[in-house]
Amino acid sequence: MGPHKTNSSGKKPFETEERGAFRDSVRRFVEQDIKPYVDEWDEAGEFPWKLHLTAGALGLYGFGIDEKYGGLGFDDCFMRAAMSEELGRCGANGVPASLASCNITTGPIQALASEAIKERVLPEVMSGAKGACLGVTEPSGGSDVANLKTRATRDGDYYVLNGSKTFITGGMNGTYFVVAARTGGEGLRGISLFLVEKGAPGFTQEAIDRKMGWWCSDTATLFFDDCRVPVSDMIGEENRGFLAIMNNFNLERVAIIAQVLGSSKLCLEESIGYAQERETFGKPLVKHQVIRHKIAEMSARIDAVEAYLDSICWRINEGDMPVAEICKAKFFATKAFEYCAGEAMQIFGGAGYVRGTLVERMYREVKVLSIGGGSEEIMHDLAVSQMGL
Image 1 (cartoon, one colour):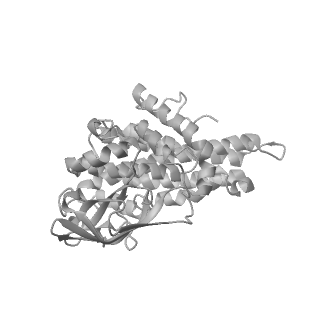
Image 2 (cartoon, rainbow, N blue to C red):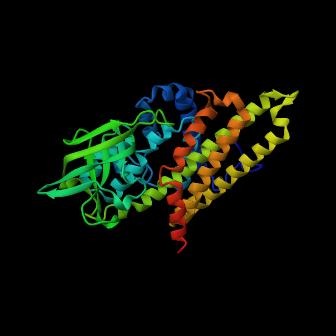
């Protein structure tokens, strides 16, 4: 089966030669370097670090990062989305999740960090030689960032961090961590950002194993016990660091929308392929009306997500940040993926319930995407708030 087409010509809106070439390079990367190995990696619970090096060479970490640090020197939301969509078609979302941990971390460094930090961190991350992670989510709060408990107390030329972070993607293998900690009063206005390096005294990591899905994703809990961080390693202004990176989360959510779009397309293609081969009651499964209707509904929901995503990317490229639309698109897209994964399981029947098949893995993985990057409930509430209600 070829890629699912959204119109009769197969040509995507807003596609340019440059964007098409970039999408093709990511697609080749996925087809050659990821898809053949995802079953093995998922069972092993990890994938080789060399994949980060290949991703770095392709420029997958470089959007919005200056060329002097090894970045692309430009940003384009359609390219960001194409990258995430193609990675979402790899068949094991733990891979793009771990790769993407760098992208949600380097933005704040580029925007807010000192020149010394940028020169120290960004070239190694851009090349894929070192990993970077964003440490915000805590065991007690989840999406309730305004109430985070990790605290940083000034002590001379250092800040002393105490607290913990959890569900940190890339947290075991990462080298550089951008950590949110409270330096002031309650709420978002009392939070600052710090660069913490792996191996810093008082900083330890513990792997989160036995996850429902994303088995090959590197996921960790981080502990800070009197961890001393130089004052020079604060990123941005004291008490205002977190407010300065709110758009970072919007771009993360756009990437998730695109990733689930790719995964939904994969579910559809697998379903069509199986329905064409499998025969029941004397004819191919795809000739039964109930199966045809499932395929039509899956395709329609995919088309709607894709159109929504294109609209958002266009607005971001025009200098807007449509927060309400991003929130709505995220929960709409993850619901579409849940539907596609569920219907793929129905079409495959017992064959889809066997561990190691693609649709079985998609079905297990689907739920985390409606939680990560801002839960479905938070997205609904934020969307309504943005509507002035």
